[in-house]
Each structure stands twice: as C-alpha cells, then as structure tokens.
Image (tube, rainbow, N blue to C red):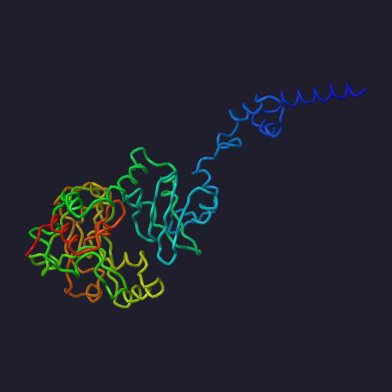
Length: 369
C-alpha cells in the first residue's frame, strides 16, 4: 500500500531536479544521497564567489564584507574585525601607535600616521592611506590590505627574512663593519670623531629615551655644516619617503608631544617620535639597510617616492627641523641625524660597547682625529 506513495515521491523529486536551475542545487549538499554528482554540479555552477564547505572565500572578498568607513576619502577597515575574522594575526599597542601583522607567514609592521610600512624587513611606501586610530581601534586602508592579501610576485620571502635576521645577529663588530662597508659618508669630506653623545644608545633625557642613530655635527665630523650643506645618499637605493610638505611645530606643540612620554613608561610613542624627527627622507638600500636622513632643512624638490637613487645623489640639506631650535626658528643645533636599520632592526642593537660601535662607524665613514 505504501509503494504508490514512494513512486509518487520519486517522480516528484525527479521533476524538481530536472526543472530547477543548477545554481539552486547547493541545498542538496546538506544530504547524504550516496553520490557526489549533485555536489560536484553545485561547485562548478552558480556564483563563483560562493564556495563549498572546506574551501575558503578569497581574503579580499572576506575583508570587503566587514564594516568599513571612509576617512579623508579613503576606505578603511578596523583591525579588531580583521583579527576576529582570522584574516590576520596581530599585535598592537595603542599608546605607542604600533601594529604588527602576520599574514600568510609574512610579517608587517606599521606605525600610526607614518606613510611607510615594513614587510619582512624591507620598507615600502604606504601610498594608499596611513594607518589611523579611530573609534578606539586601528584602521587600515583598503589598498594596503589588498596588497597584503594579494602580494606581488617580486615581494620578499618570509624564509629569507628569517635567515637574514639570523645571519645579522651572528655578526661580530668586524663582520658588521665589513657588511656595511659599501656605504659612503652622507656629507662630503666628513669623517667620524669619537663623541659618545652622538652614538646610538646615548641617553636623551629631554624625552626620557635613548639616541637611536648617528649625529653629524660640525665639531664631530671635521667639516662645517649649515642649512646650506648638502646631504647625499649613502648608497644606491629606492626612496620610500620624502617629506616635501613638512610644517615645523611650535614650541608648545613640541613640548606637548614630548610630555606624552610620561604615560608610556618614559618612552615617547613611536608615532609622536616620528614628528620630532622633523623633515626626513627614507631610502631603502641594498643588504637590507634602511637609512633615515633626519632634521633636514629642505629636500630635493625632484625626489619622488619610488624613485631609484644612486650613491652620492643629492637628497636635501642639513637642518634642525623637529628639534627645539627648529621650533624656535633659529639656526642653532644644526646637524644631520642618521638612523640605520638592518632588516627592520637597529644595526647597533647587539653591540653594547662603545668600542664595537666606533669600529663599525669608522669603517663606514672614516675616522676624524
């Protein structure tokens, strides 16, 4: 008695399968019919953006489904949602303005309101909008994230980044001096003289921190420097930042920035420290070397982000921008501050003694006695 009803159900199911468009077969995948033919059809047909269970939706598409907003005309996505969606792994410190991302084994570092990012130890211009702090969260631009999720074929490899860092850390002072011997002095005719306060690691009590680079002052390099003194590239490289539109701070503005150190364990937050560096040019050189040329009075007007540059090319003039004297508008304290990174780390970090640092710097720039 039950057989006619079974036949009727079978006929109805057959009619449904024949008449339904293939794009509507996906619901069959929820049932075990003893055959994979229906689920195969659902994969091959319909909207290509919809994937079956076990296949991930492209990261860019997932990102664009998250909440977003326009900031200064640029589309941004909040870091919290990117992490919750498992699109990225991240560490962030709001008070310091720093975010570190890991995506597909690639490591990124960004600093709030700084137009540069580091990827696997190499620095690149952040042309699609700086990382921002809005609504109690870090926000990253759409164009930057698209590059993260769809990296170019010529991008640095995560494995080589780890290998390079390990190699650098194993170098003694002699080996590091040899490794960096390809550079030339940024101020023609200058050499380095022993001056402990100009070395990396020297204390900077006015901001409760330490000196992060090397200073080129008139008394310590053997040649006079003024706001007319040219600064030249250490070596060939690529421009990743050039501050053509820098505006000098007033003394109250600068003092307010430095006061922020009291709320950050005695350290000036990285995004604010970037402002007291004044007018800068950043060049990514070979061997993983990034040089930041700091406190410039002017930059070469023709320089553009992405430009290739040769050793000795003019990039700007010595100055005091970002310093207390720069805020006062005088001609005191004029010098070049030079920061040197190797694959994202301070080159001097592993050399605690003055002798080791001098050995490296004298090999790079020569010794002035």
